[in-house]
Length: 188
Ligand SMILES: [Fe+2]
Image (cartoon, rainbow, N blue to C red; front, side, top):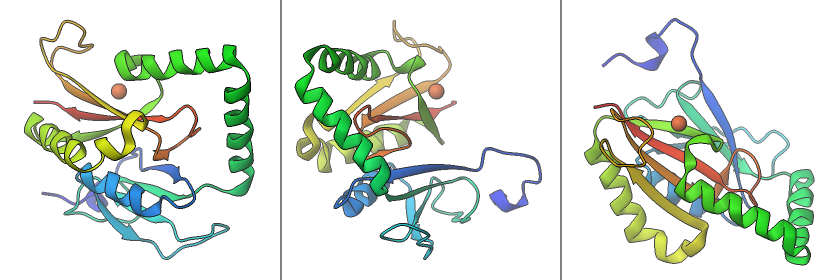
């Protein structure tokens, strides 16, 4: 198999994501359950800890391509998240809207922001599901929901694809309150 470094064209090369303070190990556990390998970039920047590189292909740990990074949320965004969390507690209308959004992310995820990982086969997606159910589901409870759409399912969006949608708020490339969908896709 060619390495990603040998690909010369333009490509979507990384996603920048975050974890909450105190959840670095949990974030590693989650991405490893997804079948990814984690390496430490050693780069800290303005963060409190180093950026971790998450490699969807454990056999090609290119630090710059086909990768997403996770690091601890910065204080400015944490303040925004905290303000939103309080709003959610105090404003029942806002809380209902947010709950609607989260429910839709779990049940009809096709128009909800996400990024996607490709797997060689639907068996690989099933293996991810087994690992998540075994190690994380009981601990994260309503912080995590996995739904797999298979070809032929009445509510599947694309008949030729298996699409698992993992909704969770351990690693996000946006707001922790709104959570993050990660699609687990196979094309065979
Ligand atoms: Fe998608």
